[in-house]
Length: 108
Image (cartoon, rainbow, N blue to C red; front, top):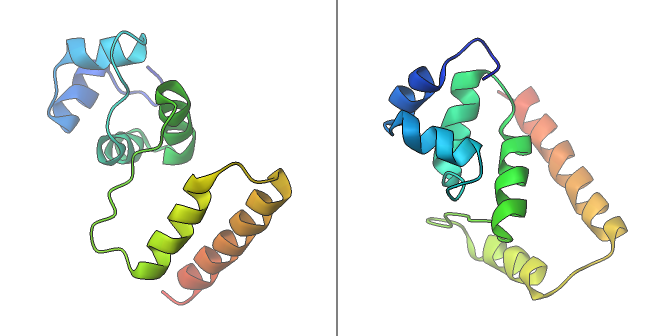
């Protein structure tokens, strides 16, 4: 394990067994759920995006807790779920979201 942390430390931090983490790492079990992936990334001092991407590719789906999301978020997510778009469309959406995130960070 990288980041100078052991599987045991990560397992304790996430409240799961070392065997479970080892099985996930080796592809013997399904990836962690999104909140646990984000928690693991923070613990390891790394960005969650590569871990989330890997989990979604492994499962063929992307889990998202939409509790308390506004209607506009459901509309956007529904539009994305309806079918594959061109890479150009995804890039434009991603750029807009990244710019928004940067503005939000600047306002903090």
